[in-house]
Length: 456
Length: 114
Image (cartoon, rainbow over all chains, first blue to last red; front, side, top):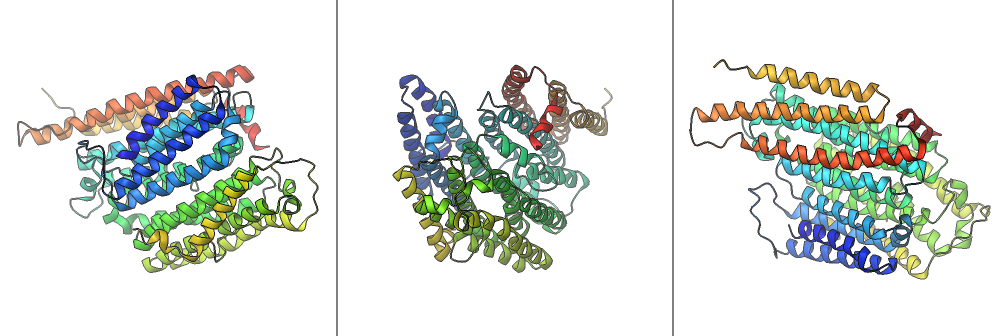
C-alpha cells in the first residue's frame, strides 16, 4: 500500500517539477530520489511498517511474495533510471512528463503486486498499459514510433476487452470478483468458468507476449524509442507475469490439471517461435525483442508448474532478466545504428563496457556463474518436480541451446571482429561504473541465488 | 412481470462482442477499429449488469437486506472510466498519426516490418 500511494503522488510531483525547473538534470535527480523513496517504503512494508491503513474490503493484500516482487521491480527501475536517465532526458521536450508516466506505471505495478480481486487486476493492468501507450509514441515526429504506439494501443485495448469478457463470465459463475471466491466451491469446472479461464489465459498471454499472441511484440518493441523498449520489455513484462502467476494460482489453482495442457502448449510455442525467429534477426534491437519472447517462454514454465521452486525461480528470473536486459538496452540506446555489425570491435574501443555487456549477455543465455543460469535452472526444476510434462523441460533446454547462438553473435562481433563502425560513442565514467555494478550483481546472484530466493 | 432468462442476455452480449472482434480483425480504419473495441467493452457491461441482477435476485429470495450483485455494477463504472481514459490516449495517438501521414489507415502499419 505504501508503494502505490507514494509512487502515484511522486508522479504528480514529477509533473510539477517540469514547471519548477527547466534543467533536465534536476528532473532526473528528483525522479531518482522518488524511486529510491518508493523502494524504501516498500521495503519498510516488508518489515511490517505500513503508513496507510486503508480498508480495501480485502481487494488488496500484500504477502511476502508480492512485496519481494515489488522490491525487485523497483530496484530494476532504479538501475534503469541510473543507466538510461540521459536518454529519457533526450526522448521528449519535457522529460518530467515521461518520468511522471513511469511513476504512474510503478503505481499500477504495485497494485498488481497485491491484487486479491479481479477488479484490482483490471485496474492495475490498465494503469500500467495506458501510460505505456503514450511512452511508445513519445517520439512524435518519428513514424515508426507513431506506428508502434497505434499498434500497441489497438492490441492492448483489444486484449483488455477479451480479459473483461473473461472476468464477466467468471463473475456470472461465482457471483464474486474475489480470487478465493472463484477458487471456492465444488471442484468441478463449469462451462462458464472454463470460458472465463480460457479468455483470461488468452488476454494474459497477449500482455506478456506469449505465442500465439506475440505478433505485436517485435513491431512495437522495434518502433518504440529504445529507452522505453527497455522499460516495456523488462519491468512491465515482469508485472504481467506476476499477475499471470498469481491469477492462475489463486483463482484457478484447483483446476491446474485442466489448464496445464493449454499452458504447456503456449509455453512450447513461445519457446520455439521466439528462439527460432531470433536467430534470423540482423538488428540487435529486434533480436532482443524476439529474445524477450523466448525468455517469456521460460517464465511461462513457472506459471505452468506453480510450486515453490517456480515462485523462487520467478523472482530470480525477474531480477536476472530485467537487470541484464536493461544493461544491454542502455548500451544499445547510445548507438544510432542498431545492427549487429555496429558492435564490431566494440571491446577494443570500450573494454569495460564491453565486459559488463558480456556478463549481461551470458546471463541472458543462461551460462553458469551468472544469475540467468540459476533462473533457468529453477524453472526446469519446477517443471521436473511437477512431473506431468517432462518433455517440456527437454524442449526448454534445446531452446536455451539455440538461444546461445544468437546471443553469441553479439559477443563475437564485440570481441573477434575488427572495428568497422565509425560512430564515436561516449560513455561517461558514472555510466561505466554503474554498468559494471550491474554485472557484479548478476555474478553475485549467479553464485548466491539464495540471497534472493531465501527471502521468500 | 415476465422475467427475461439470463441466456438471452448472454447471447445478446456475445453477439455484440463477436461483432466487435470481427470488426477489429477485418476493418482497416483506425477509428472504426477503435469503435469496435468500445463495442466489445460495452458488451461486457451489458453482461455484467445482467449477471448482477441475476445474483441479486437469487440472494434477495434468501435475505431481503442483501447487497449481492452491487459489485458488478461498480465494476461497470470502472470499465466506463477506463474506457474514457483509453479514448483520450487512443484518439490522441490517432490524431498524432493523422498529422504525420494524413490518413488513419492501418495498412500503413505494415511498413514497420521492412
